[in-house]
Length: 392
Ligand SMILES: Cc1cc2nc3c(=O)[nH]c(=O)nc-3n(C[C@H](O)[C@H](O)[C@H](O)COP(=O)(O)OP(=O)(O)OC[C@H]3O[C@@H](n4cnc5c(N)ncnc54)[C@H](O)[C@@H]3O)c2cc1C
Image 1 (tube, rainbow, N blue to C red):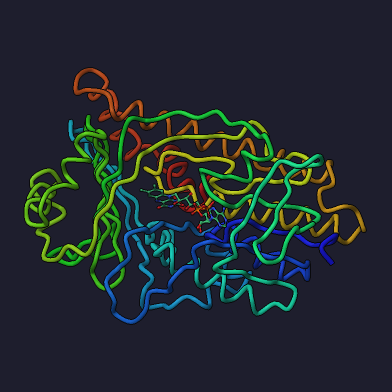
Image 2: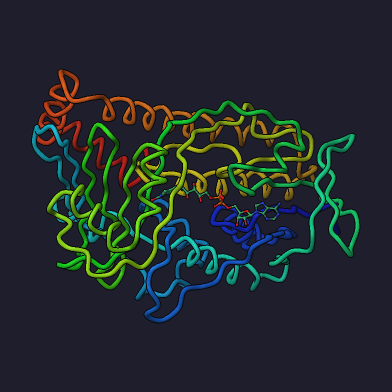
């Protein structure tokens, strides 16, 4: 059995979607997840980690049958999006209504989606989910990566998929190197209930320090993201709740209103990473193990879901033709299908970061002017909208 089986290390949003996709295609799959997601329930406050899913990702999750397993009352549609620069130049705004759509996208809690995927995937008889998995040993072997589980011994899958995130141990054991860098910024994330309650409008203001964003969540709550220097992040996170709320209210635009409750907060270093190759021997990379981009436009999971979809298609083709599931041509096709898309998004995010984090001055005037042009120029606006909806 193992000789025709895929083992996915990491059952996060991307590994979970891949398992689901392979399950739908009847391909024997095993997921090893060290930290099982805990599904948020009822009216418990929002979890800290959230993500914006674009239309393309939602369509994919619907096709897989996982979206139907999400609790509607914890999903937050957004139908308006706007961005502006603290230096002026007007606001660039979009609404779903303008283009005859019901919504531009949906904000979800990461653990909610992860749990829905894992639960739905295990309804397929060909999918086995180990969550929590027994202790996993990952070593470099003569023909790729060798996995063994405590109490079970060596696994011998046809293909190992690294869906174990940015610090991927599978990728490192496979000897797959990366290009990586640091934006010298941290995202301070806070889940709050503002007054007035957050509606369906997401916004982002650029400042020389970094962007400040509001992502609306279910039940009027919101996730606030504040990009600051690592030192400032440290001092903000060390403040008392009251002082932290005051610091946010003082720094954020008045669009936020007042914060009536703080549910949680945390800090995330912002880095970029791109693997020099997406496959080697018996290993393929998906999601953050292959690429990490600046989260300012919320595209990381959306890209990872596209990796999952492309890899599942390739594996299914090899499976149907009786080819090995680590077939070189199939994996090379997968890399070709995904690398440029991921690379392009990484470049765009880096350009945004550089352009919008420059000090106030001539560049600020130019970018304010750029936003004004974009607001009134049909083509630029349509491009940005397509990017928000489809991530391309
Ligand atoms: C502040 C911030 C905001 C973001 N906002 C957005 C957004 O709005 N939209 C968006 O699309 N993206 C967003 N992202 C990016 C997004 O969070 C990532 O792209 C996404 O989580 C990647 O998913 P993944 O499944 O590839 O990896 P991960 O989410 O890192 O999941 C990896 C999984 O592997 C498991 N694992 C790790 N090692 C092992 C092991 N040895 N054995 C077994 N299991 C293991 C982990 O427990 C985890 O469950 C944001 C990122 C940040 C930092």
